[in-house]
Image (cartoon, rainbow, N blue to C red):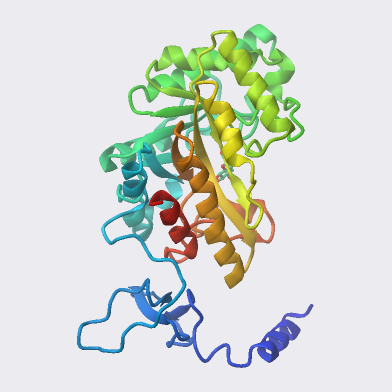
Length: 400
Ligand code: XIL
């Protein structure tokens, strides 16, 4: 469809759309030329000088005493008590942390870091890229830790836990690994040296490491990568043992996606961890990435978490985001609020689920749009660093 036709249709369908901003819509800010009044039941609230937003009246700060009319009642959920944050709520509820991924390029954005650094909101950081193999050992035996160190040091300065991500993964490998024609013995040494050097470097600073990331295909078969093709399944134990020796106090995890519902892939992961435990291989936890789609969060998630904790392992939500078609509709954002609540509630209901990490907190820096065409709006804060309804869904689960 022509762009002009789209506009014409939109204009015809919502003739008064520009008169008042919708709930959660923008209603002011430097350079903003749209409507500056909000629909009934919402209040235009300044978030920063560049962005004012229509918040449901119950969510907006109370008006000054003299400015009279009582706020209309609304069905929108209440915000967290002031002064609380996601991590504070998670800890009050017995979890270790509520955290977020971040990336080095984002750390010069001071509006972003003002939120990231608030340990009431986030008690844990994961580096989205800078501890991966291509970043840390781009050529054999030459290690670069500057990016990872920046995030490790930030977590330390902020009083936040750190998840290491990751030692062994088929993706973001330097070509000397991905295309190396290794013998089994040679690749064993390569893995041992990489995991050992990486994990030793951050010894004492990391709560948990994703030692092995994404070992399975969606049908539960093993991913055919350089590790499996050269060492069969042995690479998993090789990496875990090297990591344990390098930092005996770090919790060692295997991390994957699409294991959040009962089915072939979750069963494959269960069978792998049972075998590793039976073999005495060091393993402490399983990470559930939870890259979900609005309206399609798996109903068996809690059941699966319990299947893993029943084996004596801890579990964690490690990369949560819930994407939708962009631009996101009001109803999608409302469903997303419910979906975030459902997912966080599953972790809350399982004692061995130690924490929740979102895969960055703002749509401004989400990996989703560049990976899933036409999809985005997956995070609890929007492009303008303003909380979305999803935030209240998380709060509701953490405070239930
Ligand atoms: C993503 C990063 O967020 C992106 O910046 C990068 O371009 C690709 O990788 N599963 C994982 C993460 O385990 O490492 C991925 O992170 C997202 C999917």
